[in-house]
Length: 228
Ligand SMILES: [Zn+2]
Image (tube, rainbow, N blue to C red; front, top):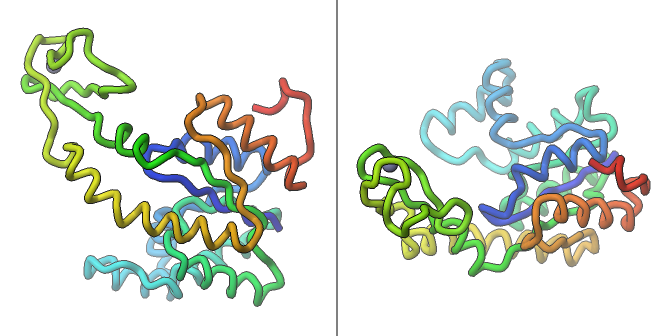
């Protein structure tokens, strides 16, 4: 069973790469949000337990999340493995996952990191601007207006919501990036970290992930035109 963890900071492009990676490995993506929602919907005992915490606005405890993950790994479509997206988020969760997998004679095959430097994460996450008149969205890097500070469509002023201001983004990111660094260190120590340069274009990131999987023996080399 291939258990592959996808790691990356917000804005690193995990959402784009996750389906490509899952497709390449022939396994489903398991995102923890979906896991909670389906367990709650199915009304399983674990789902009901998870729901108590969600209803109270609390984080679902790690042991419940890990048990939900193990249940998911036992389903037919996951017999070849899974790509985990959104878990583990902390080193404690990573250790809990290792332990639970070890009890089944399994282990994490690889942790694929889409590596984007912290200042670039800030640039990507704090570049959102919207117009006063209609909320038309712009991004300082990815979709800048023709004239700085002015909406292309209606000519109204562009502004940043408090949530999108650099200082607010920096504060919000600090904790998340710290936890991510711990998870990266965990898998580096375990010898399963595959790091790819996240500053490249989408296709090049996908190709780099592919090459890393082949080198790690997790995927067979294919003709370049068949990769995507
Ligand atoms: Zn506008």
